[in-house]
Amino acid sequence: MAIKKAYLLLLILGFMLVGNKSYSQADKESSVVYFTEDISPDGVMKIFQHVKDHVKGNVGIKVHFGEDGNEYFVPATMVEPLCKALNATLVETNVAYRGRRSQTATHIELARDHGFTFAPIDILDEGGILSLPIKGGTHFKTALIGKNIEKYETIVYFTHFKGHGSAGFGGCIKNVSMGMAVPQGKRAMHFNNFPKPDSSKCIACGDCVRDCPANAITLNPLKINKEKCIGCGKCISTCHNGAISKPDDEEQTKRFLEGLVEYAKPVVELKNSVFFNIVINVSPSCDCSGNPKTPFVPNIGILASTDIVAIEAAAHDLVDKAHHCNDAFLKVNSVSGKRQIEYAYQLGMGNMKYKLVNIDK
Ligand code: SF4
Ligand code: SF4
Picture (tube, rainbow, N blue to C red):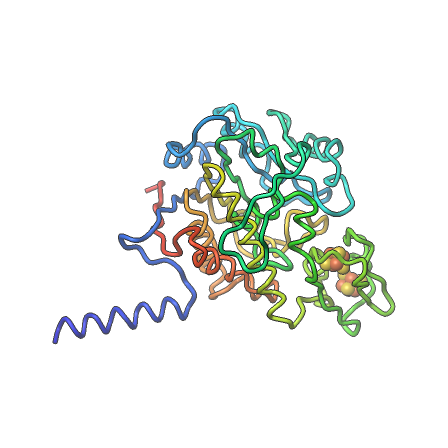
């Protein structure tokens, strides 16, 4: 009887955790996610000691160099000692829209301007396209990735965990999928993901027009030209008046989130992968926004893991905890990105259950 009661209690507890969409459940099936509150280059080096055995051969470190006008991306100084210690190359891909990050020469110039001066930079699509079959996906059959990934045995995804107008949040999954895809691949993922304008809330400040990489927005009245829009979601993050939002079409959002996951799958299967989520400057907006919104929680810390699903779940839970709610990104971006985590788990990419190991203690 006592055993039956204990079992029932466990079931209820389990249901509460799922109901709350909190992924943290430490048991023997959990993946380990390391955590430090030491947000410094030293903190990066200390936490790296816990995952370093997974690193082999020639190393590429996938970073985001930050858009012009964005100050929230992870500063170059944070990754510098790690990059030097591994004799690594900083890797990125060009974007699908106008701006300095769309061409290799200007992309590297921007990276240098933002302090990434201490290592070689490899824009992976310079070498062409690597087409990787996606096993188990329903939206995509192949992922189009920067071919220069072939030069590296290990990729360290040094990721800024923050919001994203279309994806809810952007963490390691997005840094792999959108981050490693060539512009054609990025366009394919964004395809048909149009935001919804509400002219009655628009004060014609012009911020979204300046930030739109596709010249797709016109004002008075506010309109988005679907022929031009590439679905990047920047305008959703940029508008401070709620005049541009995610479409009500839940299927479209689900397709976008699942597409990100499918694109990431063959990439992490191809190489040794180590994941960092740097949970600082947690703005609702992506690092590709030149006009990002103010961070909405205090800086939290650094996470490291070899499990891409577990590290996303852990980072999301920490942000939710700091924001005192069950889905902080749903609140600030009107879109939950949690489908990324659940679908990645369904596709066998990792474990939603994790054990958070605080290395400071
Ligand atoms: S940012 Fe918002 S308020 Fe400003 S012009 Fe664009 S839609 Fe209108
Ligand atoms: S999603 Fe918004 S910012 Fe991006 S291309 Fe479309 S209209 Fe422009």
